[in-house]
Length: 476
Length: 92
Image (cartoon, rainbow over all chains, first blue to last red; front, side, top):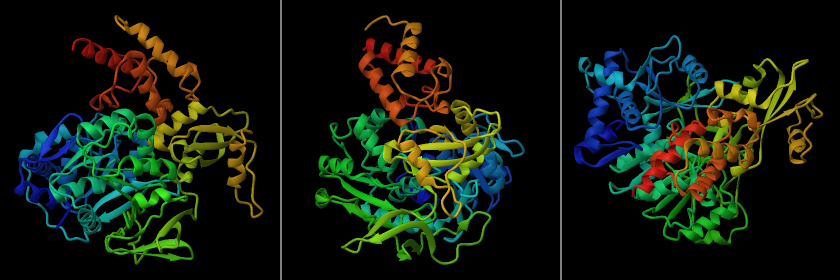
Protein backbone atom coordinates (compact mmCIF):
# COMPACT_ATOMS: atom_id res chain seq x y z
CA UNK A 1 0.00 0.00 0.00
CA UNK A 2 1.30 3.44 -0.93
CA UNK A 3 0.01 6.95 -1.45
CA UNK A 4 -0.07 6.36 -5.19
CA UNK A 5 -1.81 2.99 -5.12
CA UNK A 6 -4.88 4.70 -3.61
CA UNK A 7 -5.53 6.47 -6.91
CA UNK A 8 -4.62 3.47 -9.06
CA UNK A 9 -7.02 1.26 -7.09
CA UNK A 10 -9.87 3.78 -7.22
CA UNK A 11 -9.27 4.10 -10.97
CA UNK A 12 -9.76 0.34 -11.33
CA UNK A 13 -12.93 0.31 -9.21
CA UNK A 14 -14.59 3.51 -10.44
CA UNK A 15 -12.76 5.02 -13.43
CA UNK A 16 -15.55 7.48 -14.19
CA UNK A 17 -16.01 8.84 -10.66
CA UNK A 18 -14.79 12.40 -10.08
CA UNK A 19 -11.40 12.40 -8.30
CA UNK A 20 -10.25 16.00 -8.18
CA UNK A 21 -11.64 19.33 -9.27
CA UNK A 22 -10.09 22.79 -9.28
CA UNK A 23 -11.80 26.06 -10.21
CA UNK A 24 -11.38 25.42 -13.92
CA UNK A 25 -11.44 21.67 -14.50
CA UNK A 26 -12.02 18.23 -13.03
CA UNK A 27 -10.42 14.81 -13.52
CA UNK A 28 -12.09 11.43 -13.01
CA UNK A 29 -10.08 8.67 -11.32
CA UNK A 30 -9.40 7.13 -14.73
CA UNK A 31 -8.19 10.47 -16.07
CA UNK A 32 -6.10 11.26 -12.99
CA UNK A 33 -4.49 7.82 -13.15
CA UNK A 34 -3.64 8.22 -16.84
CA UNK A 35 -2.44 11.79 -16.33
CA UNK A 36 -0.17 10.66 -13.48
CA UNK A 37 1.35 8.00 -15.74
CA UNK A 38 1.92 10.59 -18.45
CA UNK A 39 3.84 12.78 -16.00
CA UNK A 40 5.63 9.70 -14.63
CA UNK A 41 7.01 8.86 -18.06
CA UNK A 42 8.08 12.48 -18.55
CA UNK A 43 9.79 12.67 -15.14
CA UNK A 44 11.67 9.44 -15.89
CA UNK A 45 12.63 10.87 -19.26
CA UNK A 46 14.03 13.86 -17.38
CA UNK A 47 16.18 11.53 -15.29
CA UNK A 48 14.17 11.52 -12.04
CA UNK A 49 15.06 8.40 -10.04
CA UNK A 50 13.73 6.76 -6.83
CA UNK A 51 14.69 8.84 -3.79
CA UNK A 52 15.12 12.06 -5.80
CA UNK A 53 13.24 15.15 -4.67
CA UNK A 54 10.90 16.97 -7.03
CA UNK A 55 9.73 20.46 -6.07
CA UNK A 56 6.24 21.23 -7.32
CA UNK A 57 5.91 25.03 -7.27
CA UNK A 58 2.42 25.63 -8.60
CA UNK A 59 -1.07 26.91 -8.02
CA UNK A 60 -3.60 24.46 -6.63
CA UNK A 61 -4.66 22.66 -9.77
CA UNK A 62 -5.64 19.17 -10.91
CA UNK A 63 -2.37 19.11 -12.88
CA UNK A 64 -0.34 19.70 -9.69
CA UNK A 65 -2.14 16.75 -8.07
CA UNK A 66 -1.36 14.53 -11.07
CA UNK A 67 2.31 15.60 -10.92
CA UNK A 68 2.43 14.72 -7.20
CA UNK A 69 1.05 11.26 -8.00
CA UNK A 70 3.68 10.88 -10.73
CA UNK A 71 6.51 11.85 -8.36
CA UNK A 72 5.35 9.16 -5.90
CA UNK A 73 4.96 6.56 -8.67
CA UNK A 74 8.56 7.29 -9.57
CA UNK A 75 9.59 6.40 -6.00
CA UNK A 76 10.71 10.01 -5.67
CA UNK A 77 9.87 12.49 -2.92
CA UNK A 78 7.21 15.15 -3.44
CA UNK A 79 8.03 18.65 -2.18
CA UNK A 80 4.97 20.90 -2.62
CA UNK A 81 5.43 24.68 -2.61
CA UNK A 82 2.59 27.16 -3.11
CA UNK A 83 2.87 29.51 -6.08
CA UNK A 84 2.81 32.45 -3.64
CA UNK A 85 6.25 31.51 -2.30
CA UNK A 86 8.70 34.05 -3.75
CA UNK A 87 11.62 32.85 -5.86
CA UNK A 88 14.17 33.59 -3.11
CA UNK A 89 12.42 31.29 -0.66
CA UNK A 90 12.02 28.56 -3.25
CA UNK A 91 15.75 28.89 -3.91
CA UNK A 92 16.55 28.46 -0.20
CA UNK A 93 14.32 25.42 0.03
CA UNK A 94 15.88 24.02 -3.14
CA UNK A 95 19.33 24.52 -1.63
CA UNK A 96 18.24 22.25 1.24
CA UNK A 97 16.20 19.68 -0.71
CA UNK A 98 18.59 19.53 -3.71
CA UNK A 99 15.82 18.52 -6.13
CA UNK A 100 16.29 16.78 -9.46
CA UNK A 101 14.00 19.41 -10.91
CA UNK A 102 11.28 21.94 -10.16
CA UNK A 103 7.89 21.53 -11.81
CA UNK A 104 6.01 24.81 -12.30
CA UNK A 105 2.91 26.18 -14.01
CA UNK A 106 4.36 29.62 -14.69
CA UNK A 107 7.42 31.25 -16.24
CA UNK A 108 9.29 32.01 -13.02
CA UNK A 109 12.40 29.97 -12.30
CA UNK A 110 15.21 29.39 -9.82
CA UNK A 111 18.72 29.94 -11.20
CA UNK A 112 20.87 26.82 -11.36
CA UNK A 113 18.00 24.31 -11.19
CA UNK A 114 15.99 22.88 -14.06
CA UNK A 115 12.47 24.35 -13.92
CA UNK A 116 9.88 22.73 -16.17
CA UNK A 117 6.28 23.84 -16.67
CA UNK A 118 3.67 21.03 -16.49
CA UNK A 119 2.62 21.74 -20.06
CA UNK A 120 6.14 20.96 -21.33
CA UNK A 121 6.28 17.71 -19.38
CA UNK A 122 3.06 16.52 -21.00
CA UNK A 123 4.67 16.96 -24.42
CA UNK A 124 7.68 14.83 -23.43
CA UNK A 125 5.77 11.84 -22.08
CA UNK A 126 6.22 9.50 -25.03
CA UNK A 127 9.84 8.68 -24.28
CA UNK A 128 9.75 7.31 -20.70
CA UNK A 129 8.38 4.22 -18.96
CA UNK A 130 5.22 4.41 -16.84
CA UNK A 131 5.84 1.37 -14.61
CA UNK A 132 5.20 2.25 -10.97
CA UNK A 133 8.24 1.95 -8.74
CA UNK A 134 7.40 -0.31 -5.77
CA UNK A 135 7.70 1.51 -2.44
CA UNK A 136 7.79 0.28 1.16
CA UNK A 137 5.75 1.95 3.92
CA UNK A 138 8.96 3.31 5.43
CA UNK A 139 10.05 5.03 2.20
CA UNK A 140 9.87 8.84 2.23
CA UNK A 141 6.87 10.21 0.30
CA UNK A 142 6.94 13.96 0.82
CA UNK A 143 8.74 16.82 2.54
CA UNK A 144 6.74 19.71 3.97
CA UNK A 145 8.85 22.82 4.50
CA UNK A 146 7.93 24.78 7.58
CA UNK A 147 9.31 27.91 9.18
CA UNK A 148 12.67 27.22 10.87
CA UNK A 149 13.97 28.58 14.18
CA UNK A 150 17.48 28.83 12.75
CA UNK A 151 16.28 31.36 10.19
CA UNK A 152 15.91 28.99 7.23
CA UNK A 153 12.92 26.78 6.37
CA UNK A 154 13.19 23.18 7.57
CA UNK A 155 11.87 20.14 5.77
CA UNK A 156 9.68 17.67 7.64
CA UNK A 157 10.11 14.33 5.88
CA UNK A 158 7.22 11.86 6.07
CA UNK A 159 6.84 8.34 4.74
CA UNK A 160 4.01 6.62 2.88
CA UNK A 161 3.37 4.66 6.09
CA UNK A 162 3.23 7.83 8.21
CA UNK A 163 0.52 9.32 6.02
CA UNK A 164 -1.42 6.07 5.59
CA UNK A 165 -1.59 5.39 9.34
CA UNK A 166 -3.39 8.71 9.77
CA UNK A 167 -5.47 8.46 6.60
CA UNK A 168 -6.67 4.92 7.43
CA UNK A 169 -7.72 6.01 10.90
CA UNK A 170 -9.46 9.15 9.57
CA UNK A 171 -11.40 7.23 6.88
CA UNK A 172 -12.73 4.81 9.51
CA UNK A 173 -13.48 7.49 12.09
CA UNK A 174 -15.45 9.58 9.58
CA UNK A 175 -16.97 6.65 7.60
CA UNK A 176 -15.78 8.22 4.35
CA UNK A 177 -17.33 6.71 1.22
CA UNK A 178 -17.12 7.26 -2.53
CA UNK A 179 -20.15 9.55 -2.19
CA UNK A 180 -18.23 12.09 -0.11
CA UNK A 181 -17.05 15.40 -1.50
CA UNK A 182 -14.09 16.84 0.39
CA UNK A 183 -12.95 20.45 0.24
CA UNK A 184 -9.20 21.08 0.17
CA UNK A 185 -8.78 24.47 1.77
CA UNK A 186 -5.17 24.21 2.98
CA UNK A 187 -2.12 24.69 0.79
CA UNK A 188 -0.49 21.46 -0.46
CA UNK A 189 2.53 22.38 1.69
CA UNK A 190 0.38 22.38 4.83
CA UNK A 191 -0.24 18.99 6.48
CA UNK A 192 -4.02 19.51 6.53
CA UNK A 193 -4.01 18.82 2.79
CA UNK A 194 -2.70 15.28 3.39
CA UNK A 195 -6.09 14.39 4.80
CA UNK A 196 -8.07 16.16 2.06
CA UNK A 197 -6.24 14.50 -0.82
CA UNK A 198 -5.36 11.04 0.40
CA UNK A 199 -8.45 10.34 2.50
CA UNK A 200 -10.52 11.27 -0.57
CA UNK A 201 -8.43 8.97 -2.78
CA UNK A 202 -8.58 6.12 -0.27
CA UNK A 203 -12.39 6.37 -0.18
CA UNK A 204 -12.73 6.91 -3.94
CA UNK A 205 -14.39 10.24 -3.07
CA UNK A 206 -13.80 13.60 -4.77
CA UNK A 207 -11.60 16.42 -3.52
CA UNK A 208 -12.31 20.05 -4.46
CA UNK A 209 -9.29 22.35 -4.54
CA UNK A 210 -9.58 25.85 -3.13
CA UNK A 211 -7.30 28.31 -4.88
CA UNK A 212 -5.03 30.46 -2.64
CA UNK A 213 -7.04 33.63 -3.31
CA UNK A 214 -10.39 31.92 -2.78
CA UNK A 215 -8.97 30.44 0.43
CA UNK A 216 -8.86 33.86 2.11
CA UNK A 217 -12.20 35.23 0.87
CA UNK A 218 -15.16 34.72 3.18
CA UNK A 219 -18.32 34.97 1.14
CA UNK A 220 -17.18 33.20 -2.05
CA UNK A 221 -15.79 30.44 0.17
CA UNK A 222 -19.24 29.86 1.66
CA UNK A 223 -20.57 29.89 -1.91
CA UNK A 224 -17.99 27.22 -2.80
CA UNK A 225 -18.99 25.02 0.14
CA UNK A 226 -22.63 25.10 -0.97
CA UNK A 227 -22.21 25.00 -4.77
CA UNK A 228 -19.85 22.04 -4.65
CA UNK A 229 -22.15 20.31 -2.13
CA UNK A 230 -19.12 19.67 0.12
CA UNK A 231 -19.73 16.91 2.69
CA UNK A 232 -16.39 17.12 4.57
CA UNK A 233 -14.68 20.41 5.35
CA UNK A 234 -11.24 20.77 6.98
CA UNK A 235 -9.51 24.07 7.74
CA UNK A 236 -7.98 26.14 10.47
CA UNK A 237 -10.61 27.63 12.84
CA UNK A 238 -9.91 31.23 11.78
CA UNK A 239 -11.18 30.47 8.29
CA UNK A 240 -14.49 29.24 9.72
CA UNK A 241 -14.65 32.33 11.94
CA UNK A 242 -14.00 34.52 8.88
CA UNK A 243 -16.74 32.73 6.92
CA UNK A 244 -19.17 33.14 9.83
CA UNK A 245 -18.35 36.79 10.39
CA UNK A 246 -18.23 38.00 6.78
CA UNK A 247 -19.80 35.26 4.66
CA UNK A 248 -23.09 34.44 6.40
CA UNK A 249 -21.90 30.90 7.02
CA UNK A 250 -24.42 30.24 9.78
CA UNK A 251 -27.36 31.98 8.08
CA UNK A 252 -26.87 30.13 4.78
CA UNK A 253 -27.11 26.63 6.31
CA UNK A 254 -24.49 23.87 5.83
CA UNK A 255 -25.93 22.32 2.66
CA UNK A 256 -24.65 18.77 2.21
CA UNK A 257 -22.00 19.13 4.93
CA UNK A 258 -21.85 16.23 7.39
CA UNK A 259 -18.36 16.62 8.89
CA UNK A 260 -16.47 19.77 9.86
CA UNK A 261 -12.85 19.31 10.95
CA UNK A 262 -10.47 21.92 12.27
CA UNK A 263 -6.87 21.99 13.46
CA UNK A 264 -3.81 24.20 13.61
CA UNK A 265 -4.87 26.63 16.33
CA UNK A 266 -7.32 27.09 19.17
CA UNK A 267 -10.96 27.59 18.15
CA UNK A 268 -12.24 30.55 20.24
CA UNK A 269 -15.14 29.33 22.36
CA UNK A 270 -17.84 31.84 21.40
CA UNK A 271 -17.79 31.36 17.60
CA UNK A 272 -17.31 27.61 18.14
CA UNK A 273 -20.48 27.38 20.21
CA UNK A 274 -22.37 29.45 17.62
CA UNK A 275 -21.27 27.04 14.92
CA UNK A 276 -22.11 23.99 17.06
CA UNK A 277 -25.59 25.42 17.73
CA UNK A 278 -26.22 26.34 14.09
CA UNK A 279 -25.22 22.95 12.67
CA UNK A 280 -26.81 20.27 14.88
CA UNK A 281 -26.52 17.65 12.12
CA UNK A 282 -22.81 18.15 11.41
CA UNK A 283 -20.09 16.20 13.23
CA UNK A 284 -17.34 18.54 14.43
CA UNK A 285 -13.87 17.36 15.42
CA UNK A 286 -10.98 19.31 16.88
CA UNK A 287 -7.74 17.73 15.65
CA UNK A 288 -4.25 18.36 16.98
CA UNK A 289 -0.77 17.53 15.80
CA UNK A 290 2.32 19.33 14.51
CA UNK A 291 3.51 18.75 10.93
CA UNK A 292 6.08 16.32 12.39
CA UNK A 293 3.36 13.88 13.52
CA UNK A 294 0.30 14.95 11.54
CA UNK A 295 -2.90 14.47 13.55
CA UNK A 296 -2.20 12.59 16.78
CA UNK A 297 -5.16 13.53 18.99
CA UNK A 298 -8.84 14.20 18.35
CA UNK A 299 -11.77 15.61 20.28
CA UNK A 300 -15.36 15.50 19.04
CA UNK A 301 -17.30 18.68 19.79
CA UNK A 302 -20.89 17.81 20.69
CA UNK A 303 -23.99 19.56 22.03
CA UNK A 304 -22.60 18.90 25.52
CA UNK A 305 -19.84 21.44 24.77
CA UNK A 306 -22.41 24.23 24.54
CA UNK A 307 -22.27 24.37 28.35
CA UNK A 308 -18.51 24.88 28.35
CA UNK A 309 -16.92 28.02 29.76
CA UNK A 310 -13.32 27.21 28.86
CA UNK A 311 -11.46 26.15 25.72
CA UNK A 312 -12.17 22.70 24.29
CA UNK A 313 -9.53 20.02 24.77
CA UNK A 314 -7.44 18.51 21.98
CA UNK A 315 -8.67 15.13 23.17
CA UNK A 316 -7.12 11.69 23.14
CA UNK A 317 -4.60 9.83 20.96
CA UNK A 318 -5.58 8.50 17.51
CA UNK A 319 -4.05 6.71 14.52
CA UNK A 320 -2.20 4.23 16.74
CA UNK A 321 -0.12 6.96 18.37
CA UNK A 322 0.77 7.25 22.03
CA UNK A 323 0.71 10.76 23.44
CA UNK A 324 2.15 11.59 26.83
CA UNK A 325 3.34 14.52 28.88
CA UNK A 326 6.95 14.88 29.93
CA UNK A 327 7.44 17.79 32.32
CA UNK A 328 4.35 19.38 30.75
CA UNK A 329 5.57 18.94 27.16
CA UNK A 330 3.46 16.91 24.71
CA UNK A 331 5.44 13.93 23.41
CA UNK A 332 4.17 11.81 20.51
CA UNK A 333 5.18 8.29 19.53
CA UNK A 334 3.77 5.90 16.97
CA UNK A 335 3.17 5.31 13.27
CA UNK A 336 2.49 8.92 12.25
CA UNK A 337 5.77 10.32 13.62
CA UNK A 338 7.99 11.69 10.82
CA UNK A 339 11.13 10.04 9.50
CA UNK A 340 13.09 13.16 10.48
CA UNK A 341 14.05 16.59 9.17
CA UNK A 342 15.47 16.49 5.67
CA UNK A 343 19.24 16.52 5.85
CA UNK A 344 19.17 15.83 9.59
CA UNK A 345 19.25 12.81 11.87
CA UNK A 346 16.62 10.14 11.55
CA UNK A 347 13.90 10.63 14.18
CA UNK A 348 14.65 8.10 16.90
CA UNK A 349 11.76 7.36 19.24
CA UNK A 350 8.96 9.70 20.26
CA UNK A 351 8.81 13.29 19.01
CA UNK A 352 8.92 16.17 21.51
CA UNK A 353 6.45 18.72 20.13
CA UNK A 354 7.49 21.82 22.07
CA UNK A 355 3.77 22.20 22.84
CA UNK A 356 2.66 22.33 26.44
CA UNK A 357 -0.31 20.31 27.62
CA UNK A 358 -2.21 19.13 30.65
CA UNK A 359 -5.04 16.72 31.36
CA UNK A 360 -8.53 17.97 32.18
CA UNK A 361 -10.82 16.37 34.78
CA UNK A 362 -11.96 13.76 32.22
CA UNK A 363 -8.40 12.76 31.35
CA UNK A 364 -8.47 14.59 28.01
CA UNK A 365 -5.47 16.52 26.81
CA UNK A 366 -5.60 20.32 26.74
CA UNK A 367 -3.26 22.59 24.79
CA UNK A 368 -1.43 25.16 26.94
CA UNK A 369 0.91 27.04 24.62
CA UNK A 370 4.55 26.73 23.54
CA UNK A 371 7.81 26.23 25.36
CA UNK A 372 9.62 28.42 22.78
CA UNK A 373 8.98 31.45 20.52
CA UNK A 374 7.13 29.59 17.76
CA UNK A 375 3.87 31.37 16.98
CA UNK A 376 0.76 30.81 14.92
CA UNK A 377 -0.94 33.32 12.67
CA UNK A 378 -4.30 32.00 11.46
CA UNK A 379 -2.96 28.48 11.82
CA UNK A 380 0.32 29.14 9.99
CA UNK A 381 3.36 28.18 11.96
CA UNK A 382 5.88 31.01 12.16
CA UNK A 383 9.33 30.98 13.72
CA UNK A 384 10.01 34.67 14.53
CA UNK A 385 13.72 33.99 13.96
CA UNK A 386 13.08 33.35 10.26
CA UNK A 387 11.36 36.73 9.85
CA UNK A 388 14.11 38.38 11.96
CA UNK A 389 16.83 37.08 9.70
CA UNK A 390 15.07 38.57 6.67
CA UNK A 391 14.57 41.93 8.40
CA UNK A 392 18.19 42.31 9.53
CA UNK A 393 19.30 41.60 5.97
CA UNK A 394 17.74 44.94 5.01
CA UNK A 395 20.18 47.85 4.87
CA UNK A 396 18.17 50.10 7.22
CA UNK A 397 17.82 47.51 10.01
CA UNK A 398 20.49 46.83 12.63
CA UNK A 399 18.51 44.45 14.84
CA UNK A 400 14.97 43.15 14.95
CA UNK A 401 12.54 41.22 17.13
CA UNK A 402 9.30 39.82 15.74
CA UNK A 403 6.22 39.12 17.85
CA UNK A 404 2.77 37.80 17.08
CA UNK A 405 0.21 39.86 18.97
CA UNK A 406 -3.52 39.16 19.14
CA UNK A 407 -5.30 35.88 18.50
CA UNK A 408 -7.55 34.35 15.86
CA UNK A 409 -8.49 36.74 13.05
CA UNK A 410 -6.78 39.58 14.94
CA UNK A 411 -3.34 37.94 15.13
CA UNK A 412 -0.73 40.29 13.62
CA UNK A 413 3.00 40.03 13.05
CA UNK A 414 4.73 43.01 14.66
CA UNK A 415 8.34 43.90 13.92
CA UNK A 416 10.39 45.90 16.43
CA UNK A 417 13.51 47.20 14.76
CA UNK A 418 16.59 49.12 15.81
CA UNK A 419 17.65 51.20 12.78
CA UNK A 420 21.16 51.45 11.39
CA UNK A 421 22.67 54.83 12.25
CA UNK A 422 21.09 57.58 10.18
CA UNK A 423 18.42 55.26 8.71
CA UNK A 424 14.66 55.39 9.05
CA UNK A 425 13.19 51.98 8.28
CA UNK A 426 9.99 52.31 6.26
CA UNK A 427 7.05 49.93 6.80
CA UNK A 428 5.99 49.64 3.17
CA UNK A 429 9.59 49.07 2.09
CA UNK A 430 10.23 46.39 4.74
CA UNK A 431 6.93 44.71 3.94
CA UNK A 432 7.97 44.57 0.26
CA UNK A 433 11.38 43.26 1.35
CA UNK A 434 9.63 40.48 3.35
CA UNK A 435 7.49 39.52 0.37
CA UNK A 436 10.67 39.02 -1.70
CA UNK A 437 11.92 36.36 0.73
CA UNK A 438 8.97 34.96 2.67
CA UNK A 439 5.54 33.49 1.96
CA UNK A 440 2.72 36.07 2.27
CA UNK A 441 1.60 34.87 5.70
CA UNK A 442 5.06 35.63 7.15
CA UNK A 443 5.22 39.25 5.97
CA UNK A 444 5.07 41.82 8.80
CA UNK A 445 1.80 43.63 9.55
CA UNK A 446 3.25 46.47 11.62
CA UNK A 447 6.58 48.16 12.23
CA UNK A 448 7.81 49.79 15.44
CA UNK A 449 11.16 51.58 15.47
CA UNK A 450 12.89 51.40 18.87
CA UNK A 451 16.18 52.60 20.27
CA UNK A 452 16.85 49.31 22.08
CA UNK A 453 15.10 46.20 23.35
CA UNK A 454 13.97 45.78 26.94
CA UNK A 455 15.89 42.91 28.57
CA UNK A 456 15.10 40.44 31.31
CA UNK A 457 17.41 39.99 34.30
CA UNK A 458 19.36 37.29 32.43
CA UNK A 459 19.82 39.45 29.33
CA UNK A 460 17.19 37.95 27.01
CA UNK A 461 14.86 40.25 25.07
CA UNK A 462 11.79 40.80 27.23
CA UNK A 463 9.09 39.97 24.71
CA UNK A 464 6.27 40.61 27.18
CA UNK A 465 7.43 44.18 27.76
CA UNK A 466 7.87 44.74 24.00
CA UNK A 467 4.38 43.43 23.30
CA UNK A 468 3.05 45.69 26.05
CA UNK A 469 4.32 48.72 24.12
CA UNK A 470 1.82 47.91 21.38
CA UNK A 471 -1.14 46.80 23.45
CA UNK A 472 -0.87 50.00 25.47
CA UNK A 473 -0.79 51.94 22.20
CA UNK A 474 2.50 53.57 23.19
CA UNK A 475 4.71 52.91 20.17
CA UNK A 476 8.28 53.79 20.99
CA UNK B 1 -26.91 51.29 -11.32
CA UNK B 2 -26.16 51.53 -15.00
CA UNK B 3 -23.45 52.73 -17.35
CA UNK B 4 -20.64 52.87 -14.87
CA UNK B 5 -17.50 53.59 -16.81
CA UNK B 6 -14.17 52.01 -16.03
CA UNK B 7 -12.37 55.20 -14.97
CA UNK B 8 -15.13 56.17 -12.56
CA UNK B 9 -15.31 52.69 -11.02
CA UNK B 10 -11.54 52.43 -10.64
CA UNK B 11 -11.55 55.86 -9.00
CA UNK B 12 -14.27 54.87 -6.54
CA UNK B 13 -12.58 51.59 -5.61
CA UNK B 14 -9.26 53.33 -5.18
CA UNK B 15 -10.85 55.87 -2.84
CA UNK B 16 -12.61 53.12 -0.87
CA UNK B 17 -9.40 51.13 -0.37
CA UNK B 18 -7.34 54.20 0.53
CA UNK B 19 -9.84 55.85 2.85
CA UNK B 20 -12.16 53.21 4.29
CA UNK B 21 -10.25 49.93 4.38
CA UNK B 22 -7.74 50.94 7.10
CA UNK B 23 -4.89 49.07 5.47
CA UNK B 24 -2.06 50.73 7.37
CA UNK B 25 -0.38 51.22 3.99
CA UNK B 26 0.34 54.89 3.06
CA UNK B 27 -2.29 55.90 0.51
CA UNK B 28 0.23 57.22 -2.01
CA UNK B 29 1.54 53.65 -2.34
CA UNK B 30 -1.90 52.33 -3.23
CA UNK B 31 -2.33 52.95 -6.93
CA UNK B 32 -4.39 51.41 -9.70
CA UNK B 33 -1.58 49.02 -10.55
CA UNK B 34 0.08 48.30 -7.21
CA UNK B 35 0.28 44.63 -6.15
CA UNK B 36 -2.31 44.32 -3.38
CA UNK B 37 -1.17 41.07 -1.80
CA UNK B 38 2.52 41.99 -1.63
CA UNK B 39 1.70 45.38 -0.13
CA UNK B 40 -0.41 43.72 2.53
CA UNK B 41 -3.55 45.58 1.43
CA UNK B 42 -5.71 42.50 0.97
CA UNK B 43 -5.51 40.18 3.96
CA UNK B 44 -8.49 37.94 4.63
CA UNK B 45 -10.52 40.41 6.68
CA UNK B 46 -9.96 43.30 4.26
CA UNK B 47 -10.72 41.04 1.30
CA UNK B 48 -14.01 40.14 3.00
CA UNK B 49 -14.84 43.82 3.59
CA UNK B 50 -13.94 44.78 0.02
CA UNK B 51 -16.20 42.01 -1.32
CA UNK B 52 -19.05 43.18 0.93
CA UNK B 53 -18.53 46.74 -0.35
CA UNK B 54 -18.62 45.56 -3.97
CA UNK B 55 -21.80 43.60 -3.27
CA UNK B 56 -23.70 46.40 -1.57
CA UNK B 57 -22.47 49.28 -3.76
CA UNK B 58 -22.42 47.65 -7.19
CA UNK B 59 -24.83 44.75 -6.72
CA UNK B 60 -22.17 42.20 -7.67
CA UNK B 61 -21.45 38.94 -5.89
CA UNK B 62 -18.07 37.51 -6.88
CA UNK B 63 -18.58 33.80 -7.59
CA UNK B 64 -15.93 31.36 -6.23
CA UNK B 65 -14.65 30.60 -9.72
CA UNK B 66 -13.57 34.24 -10.13
CA UNK B 67 -11.69 34.41 -6.81
CA UNK B 68 -8.26 34.02 -8.37
CA UNK B 69 -4.91 35.68 -7.87
CA UNK B 70 -5.15 37.00 -11.40
CA UNK B 71 -8.42 38.88 -10.75
CA UNK B 72 -7.32 40.22 -7.36
CA UNK B 73 -3.77 41.25 -8.22
CA UNK B 74 -4.42 44.99 -8.55
CA UNK B 75 -7.30 47.45 -8.33
CA UNK B 76 -7.31 47.56 -12.13
CA UNK B 77 -7.93 43.84 -12.40
CA UNK B 78 -10.62 44.03 -9.70
CA UNK B 79 -12.28 46.86 -11.64
CA UNK B 80 -12.32 44.76 -14.79
CA UNK B 81 -13.80 41.84 -12.85
CA UNK B 82 -16.61 43.98 -11.41
CA UNK B 83 -17.42 45.35 -14.88
CA UNK B 84 -17.42 41.84 -16.33
CA UNK B 85 -19.71 40.50 -13.61
CA UNK B 86 -22.05 43.50 -13.94
CA UNK B 87 -22.37 43.00 -17.67
CA UNK B 88 -23.18 39.31 -17.10
CA UNK B 89 -25.87 40.21 -14.55
CA UNK B 90 -27.31 42.86 -16.84
CA UNK B 91 -27.60 40.49 -19.78
CA UNK B 92 -29.57 37.87 -17.80
